[in-house]
Image (cartoon, rainbow, N blue to C red; front, side):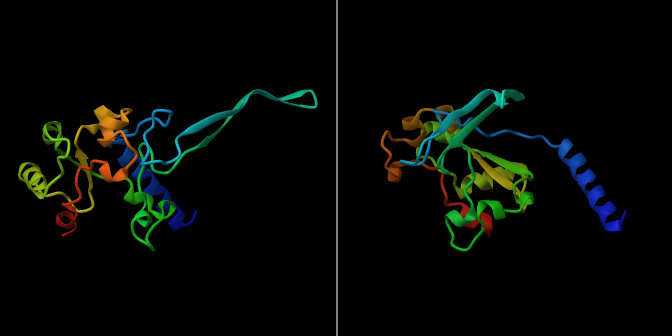
Length: 183
């Protein structure tokens, strides 16, 4: 076995040991008929194609088999936008390195502010208060903003703040802090 193969295997082993000691948090919602989508996007479709044995020439090849077709718009449910969604010539979702998708996270809780004002947004002041309490936001960490809007999941009007599909009326937790975070 070459030294590069051994090194690779050791790195994989150390990586697995590191990941085994991490706390994993599932932030996703199920994709189903209650999944909410951006504007007039195509909704979730789940169609049974086959259920039961697979038989050919009166011979049971597989005693039981199920197959489904699914289709959905990309901007629905729990998902991640690729950089190319907003900037030409940047990464598409399949080009994002896996190591960019896993890491240490910081959670800034603005739920009290959101409960009092549905148009509340994350501000630089919120981040500075978090840093005063916890220390500087580490470079390369993943930032989550907890506004507690998950309690509105499955209620389109409560979640998006409108019963229409007019995306200009949607509510957002704020983008003002991006320059602060980048610098």
